[in-house]
Image (cartoon, rainbow, N blue to C red; front, side, top):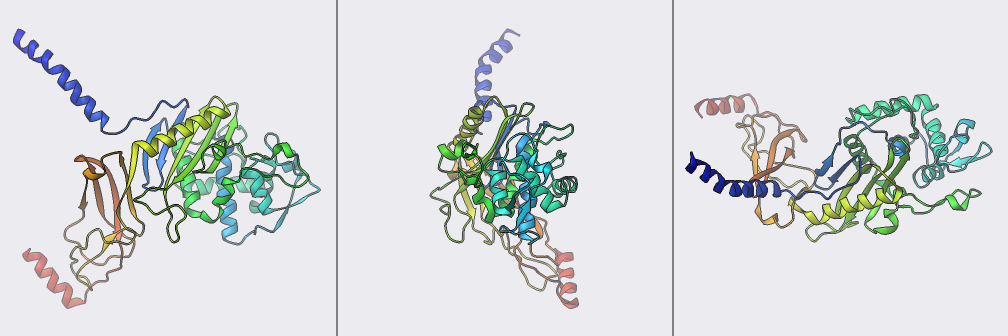
Length: 396
């Protein structure tokens, strides 16, 4: 027994070291003073850090991101246009909280209402847009909840378009990250609104012209997205930044999404300054603790396996966008990939159909799985071709 205990005592430090090394393979995020938070590498579609991301929270003015999603959708479908003017109802005029300071004597262009909603977080502008798009606030809230379900935001329920505290008006950090990434992906032509630092509508108070997202004034790589605050929600910020890296297309490069984009969701901090500081801390950590590695170009075949019973003999498998992964800094040279797919592959296949998985390993440890799709359609072979391949498969 004495010898066994001695060996256990000698082995303990080495076992502890092995455990430490295993847990240290993935960078650990800094301490973030927030009720919940999330950091997403949008370019790689990878979550880099998270805390309590499925805990229900009040979204405060982050609610307006869904209002903006629906407004942008209405613009895209030409239900409304930017130059069109909308009336200001008494309901919009009397909205409490942050405002654009418009009144029922005004007819305000949609473009200005969007700026008022995003830059000034105006509840009055938000209600005016909700009424203009939905016909009424109540109908617009129905559209918000329908869109949330369509986007897969399973833990979100909206009660109003502006985000004032109301029973049952809740979401999660995870759902907010889904909404923010889909907003950026689906409506890139409107993202410039989120980088506007100062705006006010003519005839309204000059003191009310500054975007509450302090990171727009501190970090030139930050170009959005939205702040929120109520007593119940605390101070919240969804921030996004895009920075250039040598192995990725430059931000703004023609024909490319450009750069490496991160998104932070920080909820329930103590002050306006704290939400900016904690968000900046997360973004800086994400850029330094992880590096982006482009594995394959857009529409590049990752593999081109044989196809059975098809009108052609092979199938190109990959993704229509570049395949980029975020890996711990310094490990880019240790990345390995494997493709898992059904064998045999039997036609038909439709372009965009998921047919395989790219397994990415770092230091021989699983890092993430990336679904791969057919980059082309492959129809069935004729009757004779299918019969011949059937015999070959049987022999195989």
